[in-house]
Image 1 (cartoon, rainbow, N blue to C red):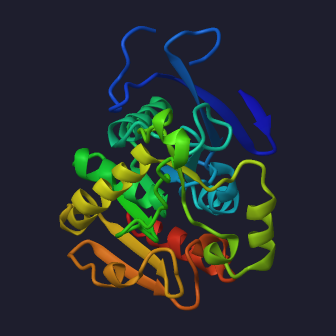
Image 2 (cartoon, rainbow, N blue to C red):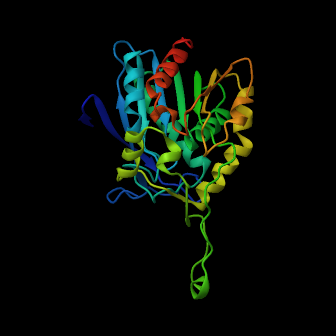
Image 3 (cartoon, one colour):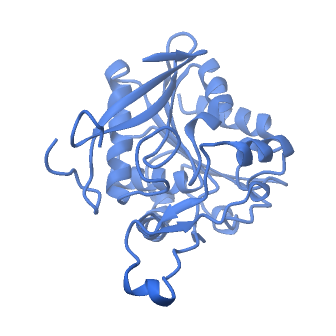
Length: 295
């Protein structure tokens, strides 16, 4: 482990996947065949930890962009994990590619197991943003009774990713559309945030990108269809946050969520990434305050 200011950079050694997201046979790190390195930025709680929060980033996003949120959570007594999903940030893998929801949930479970090694009995919470909110919802539905809370920020009820274009002309005889064919998130910096500095940082980063593969697109749509609608019926305290000016994901379905353990906040004037918008400090404080109510 290397220390980066107060954060610890951890590489989890995970198993490779099949095309459908199952654990691959045999043991894609160059020195460890069949193994895969997933990067997680961690921050310890200030004082005795109340629990652990894992922040699951959006498509084309990276975990380290949520350091400010992590710092606020740590000050409030939460240990925080900021993973880079496969194909994102510093983690290995084809840019924007996922072998499916099974793979994503396996990776989230590995992170939870890693946190549980040091905090076996403390509550575990997932915070998901955009596509990460869909992934968090899928994990919660598939793992009932595991989580103490969910925070879903700008979930993608109808993912509008751009599918890979079919080859044209002579190339269509040699190139075929497949699971790892690359499309686009369609995200622009201005659609993510109205804060100029944050938009510039997104555009200038060498780690953010707009790539997403066909398999990842199909599975995002499946998550929106099969898992997001079930969240409000789960016996899990859930906070939905959505910017009123989100042009990437319609806040309407979020506003319609209800349930005995569901709270919905539509954030006036905020875009797709309210944690990085002009009222980010207020949004982060709201998340910390809501989590305090879980304990």
